Every structure is written in C-alpha cells, then in structure tokens.
Length: 222
Ligand code: SF4
Ligand code: SF4
Image (cartoon, rainbow, N blue to C red; front, side):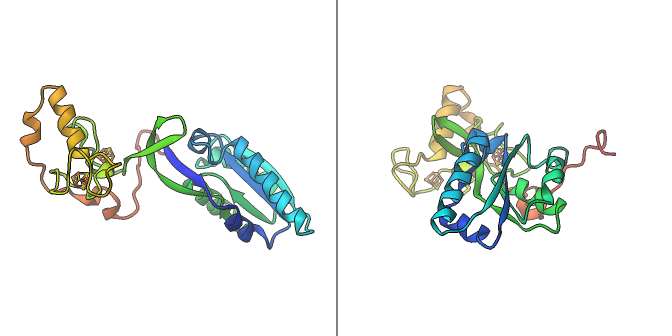
C-alpha cells in the first residue's frame, strides 16, 4: 500500500490560514490503513484546526468528508455538491488523491495535509516499511521474493557491497543488509545457486527513469 504521515500542524495551518471555508477530505484506502488520512484522522485534524483558530479569535468553517478512494474520479465526483461552499480543499489522501482533486476542480486551491512516503507493508502494529519502488520490471523471482531496489541503500542488483557487516547494512546497525536476507532466503529454499547468477544492468526506463508512466488496458479502455 501507499504509506503517508500527517504533516506538522503548523504547516497545515499556514496553508489554510488565508481561507474561511475549508473542505477537508480523507480517503478510505491506504491512508486509512496507515492511520494518516482516514475518517478518524479527518475528525482529529478538523478539531485541531478549529481549536487553533479559535485561540486566534478567528472562526473557520470546516466541512469533513471521507471518500472511498480519492484517486478515482468516480468517487471524487461526490465533492461536486460541496465545492460551491468551499474556498479551499485540504486533502488527507496520498499525492495521487490530491492531484485528482486539483485536476478536477481547477478553480479551487488544494493543499496536502499528509506527506506521501513509500509503497510498503506493515511489519507490526504501527510500523510500516518500504518494500517496493515500482521499478516496472519486477525482479523478485530472482531474489527470493525480497526487493534489493527498495531495501538496499545502494539499490545493488548484485550484492552485498563491502559495507555489509554481520548481516547489517553499513548505513546503520539497525538496518538489515538486504543481500544477507536474500542469501538466507535462497539458502532456506535450497536455491543458493541463484545467488551466483549475475543480474545484468537494469533498464531503468521501465521505472521513473523513463518519465511519467501510464498503464493502458486495451480491454478496459473506452
Ligand atoms: S523489483 Fe521492482 S517491482 Fe519488484 S518489488 Fe522491487 S521495486 Fe517493486
Ligand atoms: S550493506 Fe547491504 S543493504 Fe547496505 S548498501 Fe551494502 S549491499 Fe546494500
């Protein structure tokens, strides 16, 4: 899923300060799971903003709404009935949701209330870790299902580097060397011979190196 964290309150306050009527929009998907921008966080942020502006002697009108998916025009359309009463939109979705609102409502200023982080998985309650960088040509079949692009600090395709020490990455003793993890996994699977295979230089054009990407499903496209 896409992970995110709420921006510092002061930054959010600075962005909405010039406006009187704010449409505060959450999203029911990833940002709900990572507790950054779902219905509950929308309520908490609305209260915090009300409180802040009240202490400044300013009244602010905040309309709260949480969409099923903010990156999907079908659901964003639900905002139509609220836009006339809004001076600005504050979005608690990931950057995709913020941009969908900006694309659709060109006349309204839209501000992000969260910082979008990475594609990750939950390690345990309250902890999410980066797992994929969307390289567009997945290598997991070669690496025991562990991604060296997202999880090696140097994105090495043939590791480890000389900095790997007792299974830890040179950037921190708290960070596992992903190539140690890959070796352990291949060994457990009886597939150590895969480790000897040299992975050729990657074509980064399938990832961000090729510019903004698009998926077109001919069978679904209108
Ligand atoms: S190899 Fe590429 S697509 Fe596969 S998990 Fe890693 S970054 Fe994501
Ligand atoms: S120590 Fe391991 S994870 Fe860290 S940069 Fe080197 S190969 Fe990558």
